Image (cartoon, rainbow, N blue to C red; front, side):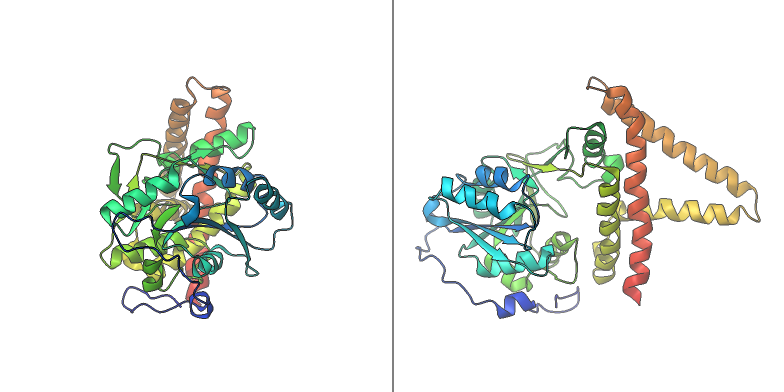
Length: 364
C-alpha cells in the first residue's frame, strides 16, 4: 500500500519483504564518493538493452557502481544480450533479478530494495542515456540536495519507417503531450523545477520514507512517486545538461495501446491524488467528451451538429498547421504533414476514452 495525500508513509510489500543489502562502507564526508545503483525494469528488450548497458557502463566510479536489471522473465534474447555484455565487460557489476509480476512498479521496488547503492538512478531498457547522464544527475542531486533529479528525453523513432518518425514527433510536441517539459525539445533555462521527470535519480532513503513505488499503479508510478516527493516539500528538478534517448512506439496500434494504458491509470492516479491534476491531463478527455456530448445533443438540437463540425475542423486545421511546421526541411516532410494529424488523434482519443473507462473501472 502507498500513502494517499492525507495518509502517512506505509511500506509496499516489496519493501517490507526485501532483505536489506549491506551498503558499501564509505566515509560520511561531503567529498566522498557515494555508491550508485542503476535500476532498470526490463521485459523483452533485446533490441535496446545492449545499447543501454553500453552507455551506462562508464558513467560512474566502477568501485561504487552497479547496474541492476529487473527482468520480467523475458521470452526473447534479452538475457542472452545481457550475458554477452557481462562477458565483454566483466569490470562492470551487472546483477539480474526476476520480476514474475511483470509490471514496472513492482520491478522498481524489487530493484531498489536489492540495490547496494545509496543513490538510485532509475532507467529504462527502452531508453539510452547520454554518456554523462548518471554522473550529472548525481552531481546535481548532491549539490542541491533536491528530492529528485532528471534530464530531458529526446524522443527517437522506434523504427526506420514514416509512421515511426511521425509518432516520435507527435509524442514530443506540445499539441500531442501538453507541457510535459521533460519531453519537449526546448527549454529556456538549464535547470527548473517541474512536476515530473521520466528517468530520475534519488536517494534510496527517500524511497524508503515514501514507502516505495505504488504497485497498484501499473503506469504513472513515476508521476505518483514524484508527486509524493513534492507533497512532502521536496523538489523535482529537470536539468538539461545531459539527456536520454527514448525510442517511441513504431506503429499506430502500439501507440494507441500505450496511451490507452496511460489514460486508465492516470484516472486512478488522479482519484488517489486529486490535487496532482494538471491541465494537460484533462484536455484529451474533454475533447472526447465534447464530441460525444455534441453528437448526442444533435439528435434533438440541430445546432449541436454545427458546433461539432466546427470543433473537428478547428482540431484538424490546427493539427495540419502544426504538422506542416514540423515537416519543413525534413525527409518526407509532406507525407509527415499528412500522417501526423492521425497520430495526434490516436494519442488524444486513446487517452481520452480510456481516462473515462478508468474512472468507471476504479470507482467500482
